Image 1 (cartoon, protein in one colour):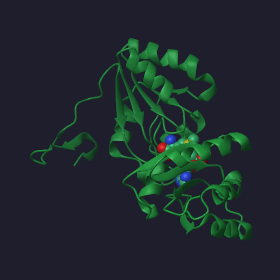
Image 2: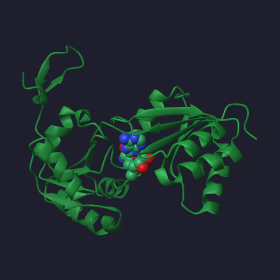
Image 3: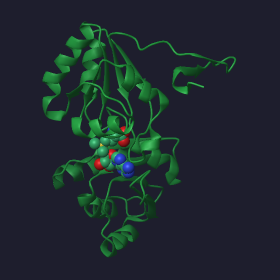
Image 4: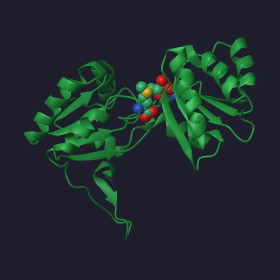
Amino acid sequence: MRQGLLQLSAMSETPRPLPPLTPATLYLVATPIGNLEDITLRALRTLRECDVIAAEDTRRTGQLLQHFGLSKPLLSYFRFNEARRGEEIIGRLQRGEKVALVTDAGTPGISDPGERVVKAARLAGFRVEPVPGPCALVAALTASGLPTEEFHFAGFLPVKSGQRRRRLEALRATAGTLAFYESPYRIGKLLGELHEIFPGATVVLARELTKKFEEFLRGTPAELLAVVAKRSLKGEFVVLVERGEKTI
Ligand code: SAM
């Protein structure tokens, strides 16, 4: 069965051939956040059939393509050339090209380049299609054991202490589980700040998701501060915070 070319009909569950990619469309293709088995069949088909791939890191995407036996022209699209490359991508859409956008890992547009070109493509009247898949936020939240019904994703906090503090203070007014992306170098700093602002909170550190050393560490900010004082925690982190009743 050529699975990559089939889709299930909602009514009958009878597989039917998928139509080819649509010209003049921007495809947002999610890619694995660690485990290459997490690529979807549709992501592979989109990367195979598009005209060009706009990639945050062409070297990294080149390796991904090579792993899956694919080869495609790559266009670098990252934070510091977003404006210029965005125009180029719109130009390609105007010429009817099928453009796939991928970032280093996960879903493009979540704390990485993507938002700007999606907005530009929409404003110019082009079709934008998500090709959903891995996202560190969703993987961490859903497996954390913390409430998922309502959550507030705050992305990366600013680096400067005063700005971080103000952002965290402002989050007091939000409801639901808080979710952050954070660099491994600032995990201790963030736990210290959470200890000051939400001392009774339950925090989950979701580390190295889908990778060999994946782990979920759970405790109050003080308990987790004690853990990071003993172990140097490396890798990638999503930090989740359930504030409960005990916030000050
Ligand atoms: N767009 C991506 C997504 O959909 O998850 C996120 C991109 S953002 C530049 C990278 C951050 O996501 C990392 O610093 C980390 O906070 C989080 N992240 C990415 N992969 C992860 C993983 N395997 N485990 C834990 N966190 C991860």
